[in-house]
Length: 140
Image 1: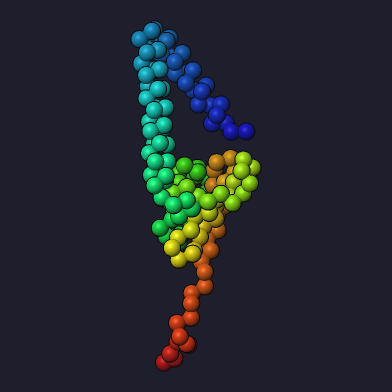
Image 2: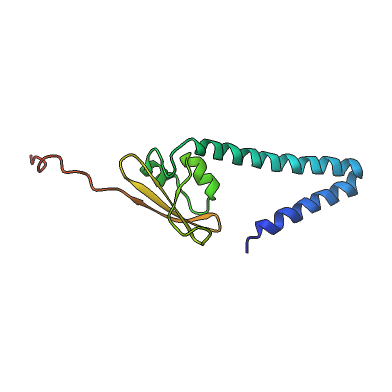
């Protein structure tokens, strides 16, 4: 169970109740204004990230190796989409946990990310073998 889905609304009610107790109706107006502003900031970030991602090919990233180096366990899917600038290619069945997405770069290297409940659990980098450049390396 995701505690954040329970704690955030309870915290909002506590803030409004404390504002009522301290300042009456004026306190409620200020508290509700602050909560609405916080929600609008998060909504604006979400829309900007998705607007940027809509203009890029699905599942594309500039450099899979650099993307792999920036990943950390526990980040949410929106943060990963913001880092890549593109939506990932969904590899798992829709609406099933864990969700598996893949981002590929121009050299066919790709990063496959696994998300459980919207949080990054693990990821793997695949790099195709380098083509042989015409023979063995010279020996000194």
